[in-house]
Image (tube, rainbow, N blue to C red):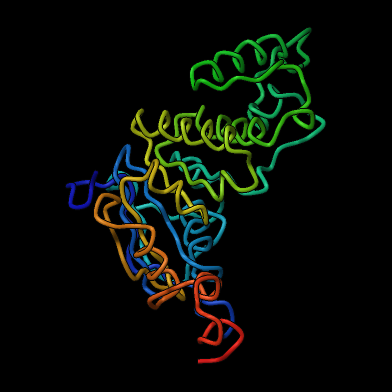
Amino acid sequence: MAVGIATPRVRMRGISKRYGTIQTLDDVSLDLAPGEVLGLVGDNGAGKSTLSKVLSGAVVPDAGTIEVDGKHVSFASPADARAQHVEMVYQDLSLCDTVDVAGNLFLGREPRRRVLGIPFLDKPRMRADAAAMLSNLGISVPDIAVHVENLSGGQRQSIAIGRAASFAPKVLIMDEPTAALAVAEVEAVLDLIRTVSARGVGVILITHRLQDLFLVCDRLQVMYEGRAIAERAISDTSIEEVVDLIVGRKFSARSARSAHAPAGSPGKGTTA
C-alpha cells in the first residue's frame, strides 16, 4: 500500500463541516492509493459517513481540499464526483425493486437505439452487456431479467457494487456492504472487494464488522468525534486496539467481566 506514495489516488486535506453548533468534521485528512482498501471506522457520529459523502459529492465541505490523481477537484453534487470516477454504494443500495437486474445496472445510463427516429431502450444490448459486466466481476445471479426484489440480500449488494464498479471508477466507497448478510454472502461481497481493488480501484470500506477489515483492508483510519485520530497498517494492529481507538479509551466488555467474576465481586450484581 500506499502511505507516502508520490501521487495518491485521493488526497483530502483540512476537510471541515459544521451543521449549526455541531462540528461534524474538524480538519480531517485522508489518503488513498490506487488498489488500496482503506477501512474507515469509528463509532456512530464519528464523522466517517460525512467524510465519505464529501468525497462522493453528496456533502459540500465548509473548508478543505480534495485531489484525485494529483488534480484538484471540487464536488458540488454526486454527478461531479462521478465525472471524476468516484462512486459510492450506500447502505440502502438505491436499487429499484421492480426493475430487472440489467435495468438496475444501467440505471440512468441505459443504452438506446432509434426506430424511425424515435429513441427506445435497447434491452437486448442492455441484457447482453449486463451479463458480461457481472461475469467480468465474478457475480452470479439466477437471471438477468429477474426483478431485484426476488434476489437475496447478498445478490442485491453485489448488483449495487457491480453497478458502481462497471463504469471505470478510480475510487469506490462502500457504506456497510456486509451488514445483515449471511456468512456465505459476506464472503462473496469480500471477494468482490478484492476483485475490484486488484484492478487498481481505490476502495474505502465503512463497516462496523471489524473482522471484515482484517480480511480485505490494507490500512485503517479511525475517526473520533469528527477528527481522524489514528492510522494503522492492518498488519500492525488488532481488533482489540481498533476497539480501544473507536471508543476513545481502553475497552473491556462489562458483560464479559460479569460472566467470569466471582459471586459478590464488582461486575456481578455489585458496583465497583
